Image 1: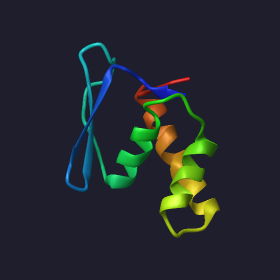
Image 2: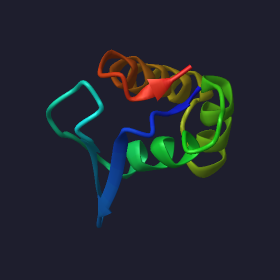
Image 3: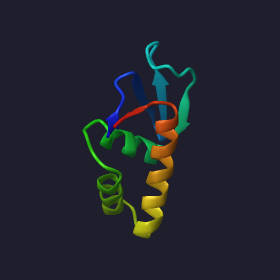
Image 4: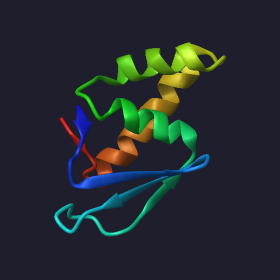
Length: 86
């Protein structure tokens, strides 16, 4: 899976904003924290949920199961708006 090219990512400090282009089929803005930004950075290249969770586990001191759950929730939300190509 990979971030859809019709969604742009903008980071300002600790906030991450995902903005659709006119061709995205979604209108609105998604706001999140720097964790969302890390996930989106990893989605710039073709990857899997497991690889994202593993990378995040290297950066954060949290139980791996909790990280996997959080990543899965973000992926579900991004898929709902069409921001992820499978």
